[in-house]
Image (cartoon, rainbow, N blue to C red; front, side, top):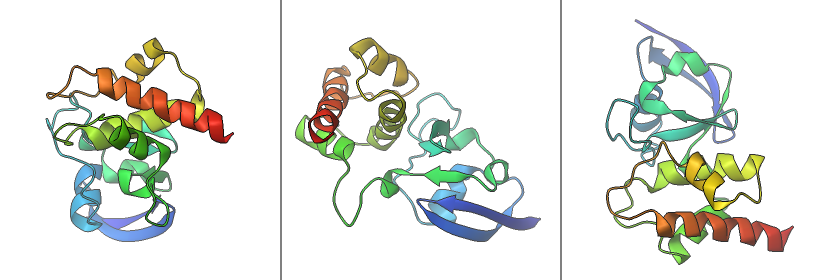
Length: 158
């Protein structure tokens, strides 16, 4: 059975008929075509599906779409503006923070939540914020350096 779901996705109000048992991940990917949010482990263990719900990181693979009705959802696609990469997206690109790129959207969304609440995090704080996001390609050094670069970039532009 489908019911009407009203929420904001990347700054746009949405109203869609969605199955009551639909996951947020499936709603974003299949209904809205926002494929940056990745389906990884399907069990809430890898973080590839991380999105922001009212500014807080949330695993879309274990969140029912209807549970976020009336809330503000942000995906990796919503971080860029007018075709320009966000500071984190740019830092991941410039500092080689992604290898295959599969985990990158989830990493960036978790890091975005961190930088919004703590613009100058320590390395330990960055590691803690990204602890729920797994990467099979790197040793996380370049990922942490990318977040540090984005924080430094924000420092310069502030």
